[in-house]
Amino acid sequence: MLGGYVISVLAAGWITLSLAFVSLILAVVIGIAAALARLSRSRALRITATLYTSVVRGIPDLVMMLLVFYSLPALLSQAAQDWGYDVYIEFSPFGAGAATLGLIFGAYMAETFRGALMNIPRGQLEAAEAYGLGRFRIFWRILLPQMMRLALPGFTNNWLVLAKATALVSLLGLQDVMFRAKGAAEATAKPFTFYALAGGFYLAVTAISLFLLSRAARRYELGVKELAR
Image (cartoon, rainbow, N blue to C red; front, side, top):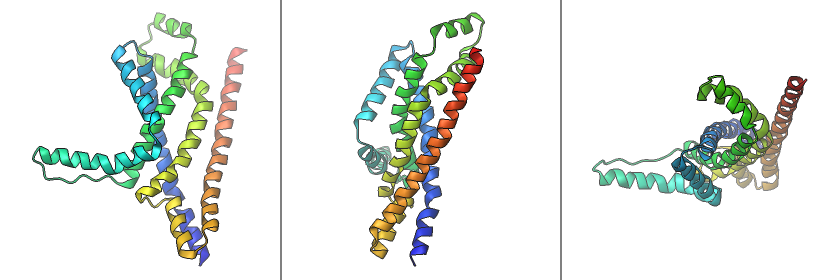
């Protein structure tokens, strides 16, 4: 009997991983955009990006998630009704969770990427501009590779926190590892067994992530040393 619950909990791991990776992609895209905006010459972009990172990092993750999942659909539905449209807007737990985590960790990624961009020698950008490279080619060929190398430690930390934060989405009803672990614990009266199983799943994700990202960091360092010779 317990074996069926164990399989059910572990089978939900793909939902948790899918949520984590979708959230990560959103966070990276938002983070790069916000980091570039923070370093932009436009005062409006700098103020907007600073407000975004400050406000989002100041609100607890769970509060932000509940606002997006419950309050935002109600607000949009009310606005649609005020405009004469009889519609009811509702977000799926997966979509709301991924969007919220992407928005939250996009703010943390923005600070990580901004710090990395600031550590790239200004002379490289001036040399690229002197060669006539456009902004996109400068970003893609010069800024992005070096930014990822310099941001990798902070990126790793943000990813690990994001992966663990996916457990919060179970409160919205998503059938992930934590949701099924809670159901199995209540059904079998063995909470330690199933919460330990869920903890082992997240620990495995952490260990594999650290192994892969540490290897990536070493490859970056070896590449830099080879170029320096």
